[in-house]
Length: 348
Ligand code: SF4
Image (cartoon, rainbow, N blue to C red; front, side, top):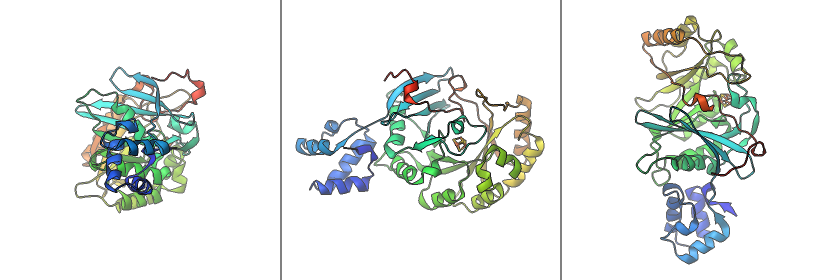
């Protein structure tokens, strides 16, 4: 039995053909699954009973189980989801002004070991499938009131999306397909630690927003914070980003986690301004969110403001990202998957 939510439109077409059905049936099934988000094949009411029965003999509609739901004082909600093989993954729903943003995970754990990130500490377990990523959107959507909806999706949760390229692209295509989940391409952002071949391939494959986790202004500091820099150094990364195919008015978002005494000097701010010169950019400054076992500290407020001011004076759009969900470990770099057996298994 296969999960229908793991199939793209073309794959559903193939299955419908095998069943000897007319091709337009594939579009119906696809829309029921991704656009209307039904949870049972029997809910596909414009299919004949016989076709539904034959679909049920081969397929099911499976979503991750909600194991834990934690709501922060600021309204941020973190979901802990149980996967079919017993692993778990987290996603975070945040509200800000008129935006409701879902931060989606793309892997269980992460192999990249960035020293400021709790996800990296647990190591890499496996890639997430299309249905497991789409399932995060559905489960988060279930939390909203009837008139509310998720406005933005960021692939910024657990894992490095470009290390799960094929499945992530399948997910993005359905996410941004008007007959699929229907998100505007401008409202979907993929964030990478800087996998150069993946960035180049992404630019040729899909047209969504790109964010790069930069976090340092010298090769030495970046290599200490992000071991991936030894393979794909900052200098090379920036030259690839200079050539990244952007739409008119498009910009690359640079995430910069400010860590006290490590990368938050005013010299760093000036150097950063110089490094990004010529790249249409938006800079997100994220004061470090401490987590147990980390020796890094968050900089003082006035240092954050001074860092931001220098970049602004240099003409950059700079936002200091308010930390969301800090009281429920939902802030940037704080996501962590626990093995299911370590949890009091309670399906919500
Ligand atoms: Fe992995 Fe991203 Fe964390 Fe680095 S910051 S360890 S790439 S999840």
